[in-house]
Length: 229
Image (cartoon, rainbow, N blue to C red; front, side, top):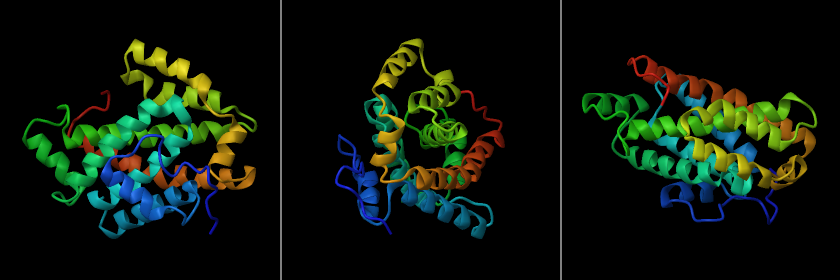
């Protein structure tokens, strides 16, 4: 497997929460960031099948922690997303010590009428799912057109996934931050990939994360909880 270049964003500019940082550190130097994330989601999907369609919380939290590296590779433009995402992932990693599956945390919060309550595990799960979807949409846009700029890809992805849930002030700040994104070529270098390999690994993430994202959405919808929040 390829090693990491010194500038690889295996850690954020600011320290990650302890639990997420430990997961990232364990994989450091083993693969490129994209490969590590893609392989982790493929393994997570296989585990879900082996468990009869149930998604276990502990491996889910560990897998999602690796995605923080992809956010940090985008620089300051997505710092807002990285900070919120890592905080929510850290909560889910901690919850994995008490709950077995994603179903378990939804059931408990439904019972306590706290699904949408600030700080609840279910609310944090919803936010993590949006983070996974944001990266997936960004990769889809990145690959859709050869030579597509990262600015265009990120702007479209944000508009599709996160903008509907953000206030005007946040949308405006994010829009301004998009101008600080690295170029397409710079991102490929930061991820320690080539033009060819980055397409392969991004597609792996898209394919492997899609059933996980769909599963999480269905957890809420099956309980008559809308996704417009």
